Length: 274
Image 1 (cartoon, helix red, strand yellow):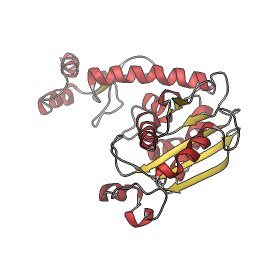
Image 2 (cartoon, rainbow, N blue to C red):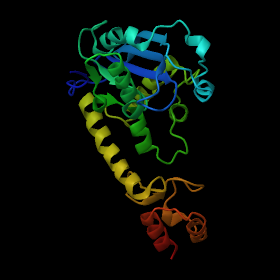
Image 3 (cartoon, one colour):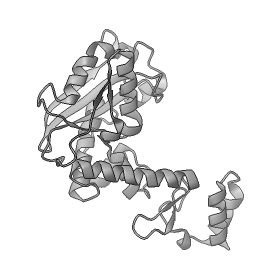
Image 4 (cartoon, rainbow, N blue to C red):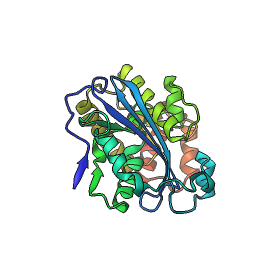
């Protein structure tokens, strides 16, 4: 099986060609939902030099809930090609055959957890013996969740607003891909993300594991400050504030009103309240 991704560890994102991807879909199930729109930007030296946008027939009705998000309805994809019909061309584009004929870095917002796995499911359905290595996708959402954990929303729109990156027509695959490229470069410029591809992926894997461990222990309620390690609230009206800065009355109220707090959260907060 051919695997897409990897092998560019010493190259800088700003020096080497890459592709930024985004999808709009029929829903959020990786295995059963389908792509209705693909957006992709081929870039060189941090500049977009080719953009692609394509609507696809998902071969299933688009649920109203999904249409309410991206505005794409059944009549908009009627007569459009299926993913299987464009799968080989899509693979050629993201592996570099279409333009550069060199391996490309791949990037997408929340692509490690969603877009990448969903595209792999589509590739399997299309009968292609190729898969995207999701571990090799640069994903700015990981760094947003790490550095900006205190934000109430860490959506692409919120992250772009925080960094001053334009995002017009959110939930259009091409607009979201363009915004993701801008966000990646803004976060590199401000040193939230390393510049070399290997360093990005190493740091991305490192912080993702720490955040997983935090989630397994405290769910969304608590997290460690990224600088000094102090314990902070990850939800509620005091999201982002140190637990030691919050009035004990609030903590006691939380302990009374939320009976299903994870045990480690309850024990830790009870100790602080005391």
